[in-house]
Length: 106
Image (cartoon, rainbow, N blue to C red):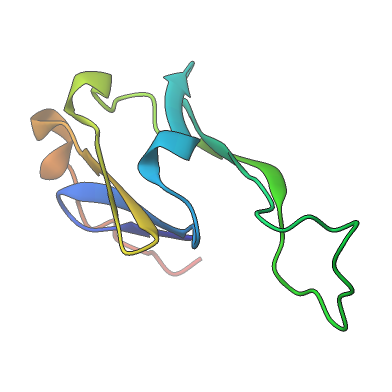
């Protein structure tokens, strides 16, 4: 998972291969974004002899603490080619609040 930030938005990109959007849940509660889901195994393990098994199955959950000033109504999520992309625009009032702070010799 990658979490990145630009001047205008925060973006999360999570690789979730082998799943469909109906198997993934994205929720926001108390400034915590939760991505969760469950990947089921398509093969009957009892009748199959595996020489190597590297793909993972089961449930997953990731919690990401977000800034309190994000508007939950403007958060969007898109799932394409195994990548879930969540975009959260920053509020207008916080976009241009950067200022240079002078460092004084002590």
